[in-house]
Image (cartoon, rainbow, N blue to C red; front, side, top):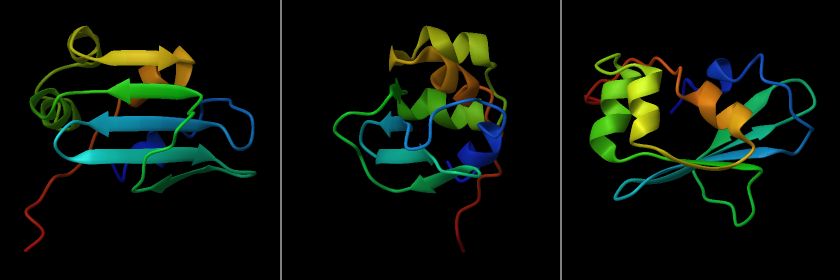
Length: 99
């Protein structure tokens, strides 16, 4: 999810708008629009402007390009403002074990 602020860099939103990403079993991340850019925190918010929920299998496959945005969208739950949620489905990440 660390790639989320970069992924959303061109998505217009009011300052303070939040995209909540939830992966059941792993938790949530809030990507908040600041005055200059989007920022990421490891938390859940009660009333985000947009919500994107993905199962763990779809999330890691999406981040590593094992599935594309359209296929991931078929398995996603999106609520609220679709623009940031759909943009988040274009994320590309490097995943490592942390060792």
